[in-house]
Image (tube, rainbow, N blue to C red; front, top):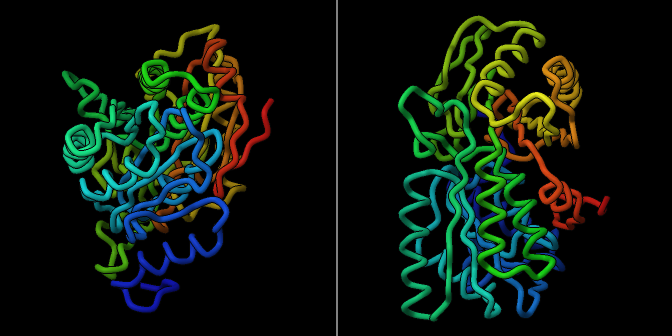
Length: 336
């Protein structure tokens, strides 16, 4: 294991301290717990949006706390869920009387702890909460499987963006939840991994991929994917991924789509743009127009080499929300 760290057990607290020191005008921690992060600029009367999950995925989750996106984040250890108490502390910190939307990925630990936090928020603080669980991973689209089999992966970025823009224009809680569900129901994501990642406390890869192998559909924690086999050319990988995505996606000929090409931690930006070239060509051949594209690292898995593609068909409502401005420490966008 070759990483920039001191002691493995100090990796997360030292990382979090660095984030607070780098962005004192954006973030604050609450309840004397570095894992409980809230915006430094709450807006009175605005619906709060709280997310959470394990560390190891920056800029997901906490990197999207800021103007036009999220209001708070409870962060766990690497690939581990935050506790109900941490989620509650963030909820209390961001509530301004308009209610709080819980928006997070489809993982059992997160679901259990957010549900418990919602009960505590109601009983202890009379805070109204509602929930949207992102489940965009097309690798979970197995025969007979429903949304519950899908993991929440990079496509949650689109859900954050749309829900955050809705809350920023002072929509009520029901509207923000409706928009988050609408975006979440439309987005589909599929990833491919070329190398594993290493959790600092463990010190070795949690799984193995051969030098000349790839795995399509692998999750951001190393969960098994759809198919493992010899590494193909970029064009062949894109064709296989897009074939699966378009079969699973609600996209149809004549639609406009938002596209996210996401690096998983160790893939050069040059390679991501090379992959987008193929994605763009395949969409054009399918009669699907690209509304807007984002290329970069939006949801990573430590130093995993790989990438994912997310597609979301858009209408006028979602276009306006995607085009709205955002200003967070790890994502900035001028309004279009």
